[in-house]
Amino acid sequence: MAQAVEEWYKQMPVITRSYLTAAVVTTIGCSLEIISPYHLYLNPRLVVKQYQFWRLVTNFLYFRKMDLDFLFHMFFLARYCKLLEENSFRGRTADFFYMLLFGASVLTGIVLLGGMIPYLSESFAKIIFLSNSLTFMMVYVWSKQNPFIHMSFLGLFTFTAAYLPWVLLGFSVLVGASAWVDLLGMIAGHAYYFLEDVYPRMTGRRPLKTPSLIKALFADDPVVVARPANVRFAAPQPEELHQD
Image 1 (cartoon, rainbow, N blue to C red):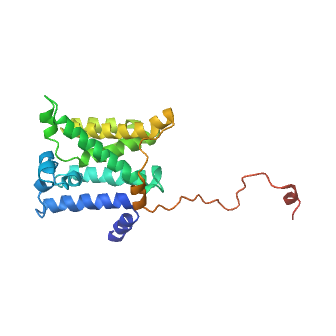
Image 2: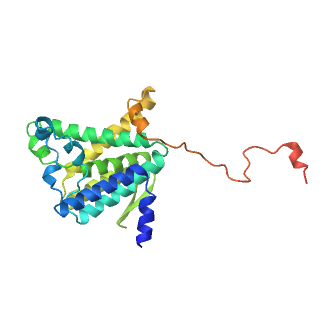
Image 3: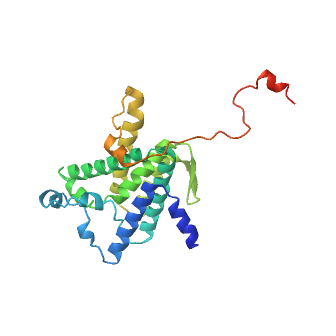
């Protein structure tokens, strides 16, 4: 069992493995009171006035207490982060990292701006950890890129992947969780999907081109598609037909 888990962990792509490890270590550290969540949560005042810039990162690593909800989000993080990195972003680790960086920036910006809007500031002030929202963003992007995959929710009903974010949003509401967290992830995910997939097809321009500095951090191996043996892609030559 332990060996199987080790192999599963080692086979994860680098970004998925790094994020999952950081999230689990941070959450366990807080549960054991080795780390205090008060040093991790997003606080704009402390970031600006006391230069505690790490909060812009650490608020994406803490998934609250270790319970069923924690396991639920770890499953979605490991599954959909891995699916995106291995399929849609195969051979494009820098682009995948940039997607997460874009999502984290959008989520942080929404919370900061929302805190300045009357009647909404109180609701946004309660959002101090954006880890669940970033995970939901990955689910949303994956559903947009794989809209026709058939899925089942707890064996109760089936649907296509395009509706996965809405099914999960409805489930969150049913169990009494905050819908704001999932909605923020959907907004960030749709912003990325529009700017990366829809807008370039409309205009021919790609506004989310990964900066060369980020590309330099990741040495991606080229994706090579192997040709199967004994498979012809063209009609045989006449002389081959007369060979014994």
